[in-house]
Length: 462
Ligand SMILES: Cc1cc2nc3c(=O)[nH]c(=O)nc-3n(C[C@H](O)[C@H](O)[C@H](O)COP(=O)(O)OP(=O)(O)OC[C@H]3O[C@@H](n4cnc5c(N)ncnc54)[C@H](O)[C@@H]3O)c2cc1C
Image 1 (cartoon, rainbow, N blue to C red):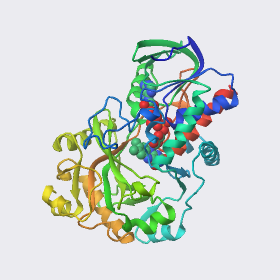
Image 2 (image 1 turned 180 degrees about the horizontal axis):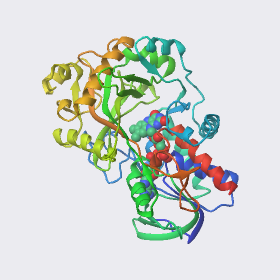
Image 3 (image 1 turned 45 degrees about the vertical axis):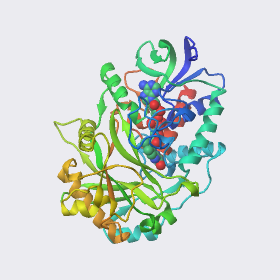
Image 4 (image 1 turned 90 degrees about the vertical axis):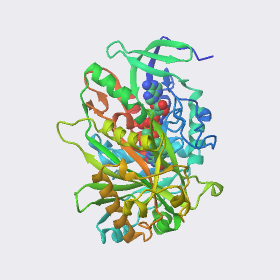
C-alpha cells in the first residue's frame, strides 16, 4: 500500500536524484524540525532493474520508468560515478555563483558521500598529458576526479537514502503532475490515485528525464526559458589499451577539438575505462551511454567514450531537444527500435557494417546493437566533425582511428531549458526553486549535488 500524505509540509522536493537527495540531507542536517517530503516518480533504488543491464533482454524494452534514468538516486545511480572536482566542466553553476563557492559546495557534497562509504581516492590532473594534447590542437580540461564506480556508487547512494528514510517522507512511484504557483498546492499520482497537499517551499530537482515536464510547467506559469544548445554524436568503443596512458593517470580524459572544416566543437567525454556500452530510454527514444564498474570481475577488455558535436542554433529555430530526438529516433527507426553499430573503417569507406563484417571485427562489442550505417541517420555536418575528431585523437592515442573502432549511435545530450531565476529561485514565484540537470544549471553529479546543498542552505536561512 502506498504511504499516506500529510496535508502540508515545510519543504517538498520533486526528484530523488543526487540534487534532491543532497538538498533533503542538508535541510534535515541544519534543521531537524523541518517537515520534508521527497517525491520520486521512479522505483526505490533496489527495485531499479534495467532488463538490458541485468541480461534479461538484449534490447531495450522501453519500460514505463527507465531504470537507468529514473528512480531513487536519479540518473547517477547506474552511472560510472565519476565525481568531478572542477568548475571547468560539469555544468554552469559559475554563471550564478563564484567559482570558489562552487568548489566549496562540491567538496561539502563529497564529504557527505564519503560519510556514506564513497572512496577517498582522487586522480590528479596532468600537465604532461595536457601538453601532448595541445601539440595536436586538442584541448584537455583539467580536474581532480574520483571514480566512485557503478557498483560502489550504488551502495553509497543506498546508504544515504536509508539514512534519509528515517528523517523525511520519501514517496517513490509518485509522479508530480502539477504545482499551483500561488497556493503551492502540489498534485501527484501514485498507484492509488491522485493526491494533493501543500508545501511552503518547493524545489524542482527533476533531472534530464523531468525537463520536459518542468519546461511545460514553466511555459504554463509564465517563467521564461532559454535553450539553444544540443550535443549529438556517437559512443566510441575500442580496446582499453589504446587510452591507458591517459586513463591510468587522470582516469577521465575530457578533450575538445575544433574541426577545421566547420569550426564546430566536438567533445570527447564520459570515458568508461574497461566498461560497457549501455542503452538509455529518454521519453521513448533509445540512445547510448556507457558504464564501468570498480569490481575487477565486471571489467571488460574495452573502454568507451562519448564523442559529441555541439550545435548552438540561431533564430528562428529554438527547439534543439526535438532536433536531437529526431536524429536519435531515425537511428531507432533504421535499427528496428534499437541502436546502430558501425566500424569506423566501414563508415569512412561509405559502406554499412553488416553481421559478417561485425563478426570479423577484432574489437568485440559490449552492447548488442544492430550493425548498419550511421551516415543514414546522422547529419553530414556532425558526421564529418566526428570523423575529423577521431583522426585528431589518433595522434595522442594511436589506434583510436583503427578500422575496427566501433561507433554506436545515436548518443545525444540534451540540455534542459534554463528558467529565468535569481539565485535559483524561479522568477515570479515565491519560495519555488530549481536545482540540477532538469533546470539546465548542471550536467554532472558533483555540480547537481552542490546545487542541492546550496539551495537547502538558502531555504534554511530564509
Ligand atoms: C548513464 C549515465 C551515466 C552518467 N555518468 C556520470 C558520471 O560518471 N559522472 C557525472 O558527474 N555525471 C554522470 N551522469 C550525469 C549525472 O547522472 C547527472 O548529472 C545527475 O544525476 C543529475 O542529478 P539531478 O539530481 O539533477 O537529476 P537526476 O539524477 O536525473 O534525478 C532526477 C530525478 O527526478 C525524478 N523526476 C523527474 N520528474 C519527476 C516528477 N514529475 N515527479 C517525480 N519525480 C520526478 C526522476 O525520475 C529522477 O530520478 C550520467 C548520466 C547517465 C544517464
